[in-house]
Amino acid sequence: MVERLSRQTAQGRRAIRDEQSLRRIDRDRTESDGHRSLQRIAARLLATKELEEETLAELDRIAAAIDRKVRWKFFVVTWLFGVSTLLTIAGFMAWSAVAVSGTDQGLRPLIVIAPLAAIVIGSLAYWRHLQYGFGRIRSPRPAIYGEGGKVTIDTLEKLFAYLGRRTAPRAYYRTRSGEKCYLSRHLFSGALRGLLLSEDAAARAMVIPPDGLWFFREVKIEAEPEDIIAALKLKPRSGGRPQQYDYAAIALALLEHPEMSAIDPARHGAESRVMGLIHVLCDPSDERDNDIPVPEETELRKFAKRILAAIEKNRIHSND
Image (cartoon, rainbow, N blue to C red; front, side, top):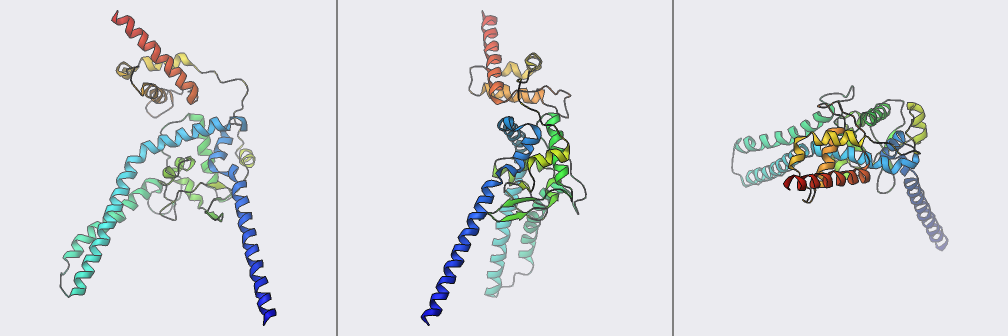
């Protein structure tokens, strides 16, 4: 009896050690595949490793611009879905309570509950249609981008098209316990695929997976960045001599815009307003053919300060 209990205790200890060992392995794997995140792979496609931080900031701006463009639609859809779901559940509970009491309400409760249920289904259907369309996903939807240089957007679209192939490395995410869960390749066909590059989980949550209703995890790829660079035959831009920006063209585009006359250099937020206007005027878009390279955030803020200082000086001289 004692020997049997001893064996069981030893087996239990071994099982605990094995489980702890597996958890350590999963944790080590989670920590070691950080460079395989979709955002970092996209950054490596755009630039070499020494420029990774700057490129990640550029990707954050692109994702934030998509967020600003669709956030209000997402808010309306989630509000309709949430309120209608609560009212539908409340209606069913009230109907059940009345039915249990023996009171015959006929079809009147159904007349109230059916439209609410239709709103719940309709809001989900609308958001899925926005991203993938109806029916089977046969081809990528036109992507929604708020800003970004043409070369950058073209490179990102090449990456998404590659990851959407059947022969491409598989995408996955890690659960809290470190378990690897694979994702459908059609995730990269949605119109909001650019949001998958966001560092913000709230922005990624706007992306509905093709085979689910909710997703906010960081996407990772079962391949090294160098392998994807080789497969796409891309040449990331490298460091070295700092990029020369056409500040004269940026200033000219600004001064010709009527909104500049309404900016007060002394007011809080004037710098951010000028920086935003520079992106609107210089980044490529459907409305404009401009594609003027814009400096990174720090240099752009310095340039915006110089612009505001010049405007303030000119206005003082004009008043004199």
